[in-house]
Image (cartoon, rainbow, N blue to C red; front, top):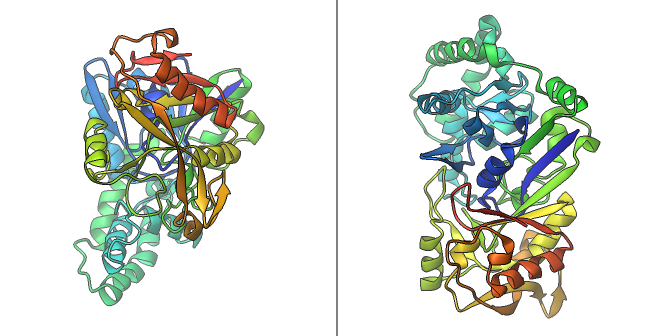
Amino acid sequence: MTGIVVIGTQFGDEGKGKITDFLSEKADIVARFQGGNNAGHTVKVAEHTVKLHHLPSGVMHNKTVMIGAGVIIDPKVLEEELKTIESIGKKPGLFIDPRCHIIMPWHNALDIAGEESNNGSIGTTKRGIGPCYADKCLRKGIRFEDLVYERRLEEAIERIFPEKKKILEKVYGKKIDFSAESVFKEYSRLGKKFAPFLKDVSFHVCAQLEKGKEILFEGAQGTFLDNDFGTYPYVTSSHPLSGGVATGIGIPINKISRVVGIVKAYTTRVGNGPFPTELQGKQADDLREKGEEFGTTTGRARRVGWLDIPMLRTAHRLNGFTELAITKLDVLSGMKELKVAVEYDIGGKIVKNFPYSTSTVEKAKPVYKTVKGFTLSGKEKKFSELPKEAKDYLKLIEESLGVPVKFVSVGPERNETIIC
């Protein structure tokens, strides 16, 4: 029995997709446990580059992929992803938990209206994620199982639609371009399409683990976007921590044997919120361009900064990493020197961990350690072939967290991954 979890250690966009794709080659099943289509990852296999938002990365290897109950789904987006995958000859086995909540048209409309009324203060992706999770908590949501039964779907829409229409028109002054009838027609069609894929993911995952199968659990976003432990309110609506696997899939926590922390070799963030090591000006522009730091889902330019050790220490405490994967090391190649935040100065007090309070994080001034830069040849295939300075950079991360680095990504291709 092997349950492996892939977790982002920062603000998301750490390169989880590539590492998940790399690890999925040996996995029997890849399962997604939280989030929605607000996050995306790019997977490159051979001549194909595919951007995924719902489907786990294992689809590129015709693996069985599962979407757990903790995921919220826009079935129209999922339909398009399946078309893309099938167009390049991939036919993965797909299981969708019937308990997954559905992103409805009013969720997208409410998300957009809410962001506009707040002048974009949170910086959501406007994909309806927050409103959908809110309805889930308020027990007003529509689940995938409801799409399959037309009468149940019709009753749910009749109950929910008038309230959402009133909020959009009376509170936000928005005119909607959909009706209860059009929504029912479209989503009953989607229900028929996806009915064959609906399975009890919790049951099937537990059964396969008992048989000794290797299952890779893939999340979205990163540790510091967690709804409880992130930089609230600049967070997502779900729990992208290792503990989220238990509730998002429906398995006991002791079924997890490995937790792989994905660390981008520098730090990035999309949207608003505190960012202690953020760079500005030309230095930021150069790093952003070299790293191609633009959102998979929104296309927005990501904010960039130096590596933040206090953040990683706290991520380890929250997730319990057994190993680390360092991504985009190649992006730092060619720099004469690099800075790494090893602690914070907060009002004259030295702090080694990421503060729990967002207002305190905003006051944190990084205390940097300057290290020698390195240049990669692009031909490195083994850890021993890396320059000494690159090894020292990786060693600094290892020693700061007390967790071994097991994988190093030195390029976007699957074969540009070093196993340490």
